[in-house]
Image 1 (tube, rainbow, N blue to C red):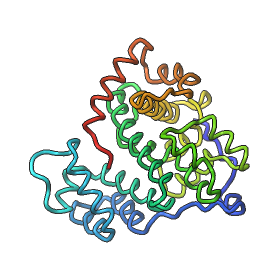
Image 2: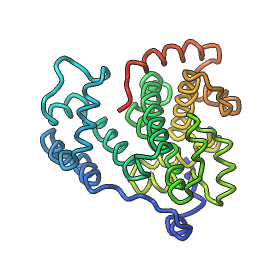
Image 3: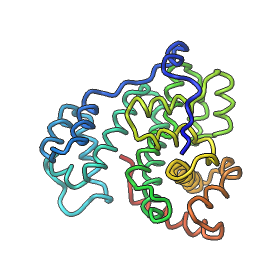
Image 4: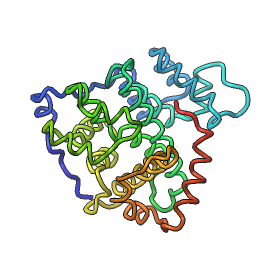
Length: 283
């Protein structure tokens, strides 16, 4: 893979008044713990318990049909065991990111993060079904879905009117976002890449965020597949909402080709995906 450098670096972003959000300390400690060879559910729960909001979201997730397996767990430790360590970390990242970027009381941010969670869940389902073709695992696709457009709310903090109207219309209009990038002289793809690197996401996930405007023809393997998965997730979401996906008109054939799908399969596939998604609530 030929990794492309972002158009701006953190110092340049700072000089333009763009703030890359820091990771909360509890997330740093959780990542360090799970990267070690010595952790268990008790230790993981002890770290998460330092953030009551995060702990509450873990309990909310474990009560969903996706993870239910009988009586709801009565301790955080049991909840983590039920969900699994990787998905616990993904939920922690999603919660930490949404609380680090933007005022949760503002409708535009709430809309944005709600959509990001939906994209993440749909991408996870697609990756699970296509893993033999793409070798992208559900937790990786979930992570990418959460961070895919995270450069947008970062820029909204710097420029209060940046894409706010677009976010409130219940979709992400990729061409219009490019126009906004030109207007503000900053690239939201590059900003998202900087956030992903600063939060220590895998490099192929960061590269997918950098290249996400279209299925990158110069990128191979995991980057291209991950971009295709999230674009299909976005298309599935818009189709379910009965919103025309103008972006799909441009990149749909490349997405299907990358994921090993024939165009004639798409309608049935999306119907099946929607049925599966409807039983998985947003975290």
